[in-house]
Length: 387
Image (cartoon, rainbow, N blue to C red):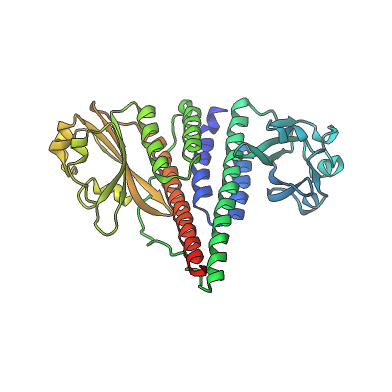
């Protein structure tokens, strides 16, 4: 991955999971994924196709930079159109209009396409489609670029699987309400609090690839479960390992009590955790305005609500990060160092990216759990009414 592009790639991967998990419109998400990938790689065009199990064709679901004539050239058969990709392997074809695996070589030549990179779109362990990138010139992709593109394709697969899962449960719930003759309650949005978002600042190009790989690994782990408590524990444990710190904790804000309720923590004593819940207006309150806050000397910083207990716990420095979901600060991720530590801007940028992805992952998991609980409750209620 060229060093000049690492910040753009890291930014794109930072933004993509957030867009995927927080978007209500799957089509817009997939269109954006293709367009931004094309822009990041500075190539001619891109397209995303899904396998139609009945017709064995690759159905176009998103495209950018391709003419209507090319898109309407005809169906792509899974057995004929670069079938190796459907076995889970990326395939790059230069001078594609002369390759026997291309179904419509004349259309490709007319469109001005020379090189095609095809990457599998995977949901779970199953290939469900293909992300294709088109270059007008002969193009060699590095291993790192293919790794980056494969990670984005994986995010697309997660978006599709996520949307299908929510759609399935939502349809079941709507069907139950219809059967009971009750109108399904509208989805009520939380208040739209405005805050100053943490700016995405460039990172050291030499670190960009490492941050991308770590963020990819963490994102995979976070998205591997729909259990919100498990998601949050994964986040806290990963942060400790990555940053080599004493402890970490994740708290969510309670809108009624104005406390930051502890959800998960690792590395903190029971005595410290029993000191009391931090309050949103007293405990590093700038974080709740959307800002990452460093406290390098806990013994002498007035922003701490429990300074004596913090020092007694052996905590010298704290990094407090906002957890954001759908333009709201929903909680804080706090990182505790036993040594006095000044976190670098690169580290803060990376951790801000992680906290941002974590926010929508947490809310997504909670929404999923709530829908499942509603489905179970109303299924039982309907069964009781029919007995």
